[in-house]
Image 1 (cartoon, protein in one colour):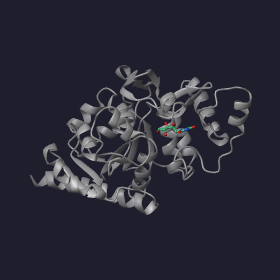
Image 2: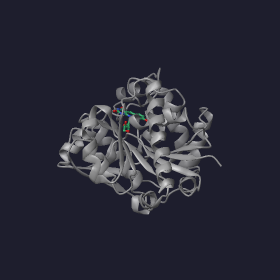
Image 3: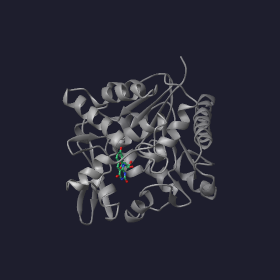
Length: 321
Ligand code: FO1
C-alpha cells in the first residue's frame, strides 16, 4: 500500500500549502484535518470559514485578494441586509451564501459536518477529503483585557484590535474525533503529518484540543512536520505576530516550533530566517530553511515538495537507526 499523509490546517495560509500538496499526492494518499473552532452561527446559518477557505482553494474558486470567500462574488444579499438594519459586519457573498444555506439545512436534517463537507466538496469536484477536526461544536473564545469574545467577533467585527490574554476552546472537552480522522491517524500506511503554516493559537491549537488528537500525534511512529507561519518576525497574514507580542511570546519561528515541541519531529522555517537555525538545536527536531512565501502555484507546489522531502528524510533516518 502507498504512503499516506495527513495535513492539519486552518485558513488562508494553510490552504496555500494544502493546494501545493494536492498537486503531489492524490486523494488516496492525502487528506486534510481542518480547524472548526472559527465556526459560528450567524443569521441562522452555520458558517465554517476554514473548511470553506480550503474548499474554495482546492476547487479553484477562491478570491485571490482576500484568500477567503469566492472569486467574482457579488454582494446584493449583504448590501440589502445592511439597508434593512441587519448585522452586516460579516461579509457573506451571494454565491457563498448558497453553501451556508445548504450546509445549515443538512445539519438540521441530522447530517454530520463531515458528511455535509464530503457532499459539498464532491459537488465542487474536489477529490481529497476535507475532514472537520470533529463533528461536535467547538468554539474558539478569545480572552481579552475587555472580556471574552467569540472568535469571529474578535477577528472580523473587532478587526483583531483588542489585546489578547489567552484562548479557550468551548466544547472541546466533550468533542470526539470522527471515525474518518481516526481512520487516517490509525492507518499503518501513514508516513507523515504536516502542520500547515497557520496561526498556532487559533488555527492549530483548536485542532490539538480535540481530546486524544495531540496524544496520538505524540505517539505516532510517523514524523510530524510543521511549516512556520512567521517569516522574518512577521506573519504573512492575520494576527499571529500581534498575538505573540500580546502574549509576551518571542515573535519568531523558533517560538512557533517550541509551541509544538512535544509533537514535532521536523520544522521548516523561511530561508530569510536561516540565521535562526542554531536556535533549534535544543528542541530535538530537524529544522531546515526553505522559501516558504507562497505567491504562485509553483511556490505552493515547491514548498509541498520540500515538506514531503523532509518527511521522507526523517522516515529514512529512523529506519537507519
Ligand atoms: N474575514 C474577514 O476578515 N472579513 C469578513 O467579512 C469575512 C467573511 C467571511 C465569510 C465567509 C467565510 O468563509 C470567511 C469569511 N472571512 C472573513 C474569513 C474568516 O473570518 C476566517 O475565520 C479567518 O480568515 C480566519 O481563518
